[in-house]
Image (tube, rainbow, N blue to C red; front, side, top):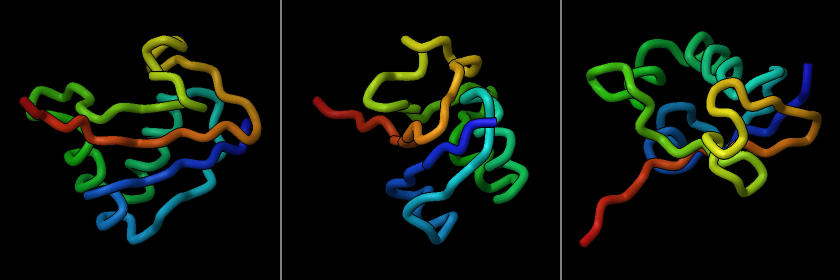
Length: 90
């Protein structure tokens, strides 16, 4: 398993009461599972819409996780996964 730094911003920082965590996981999906297990339903509800779709951007080393394989994106030691809420503007 890879040791990955997960960085929190906005509501997730308030929810976790941390700026970052170190998580051991092989994929982006595993990171989400472990964080939901650690922080409970409020974490899951924060990052998903009412239909269960992920609404946060998952940025792995500067790249959107969808460009790297989505939730199946493979992780390696020292990767940085930032969880960012998209902001609407106009």
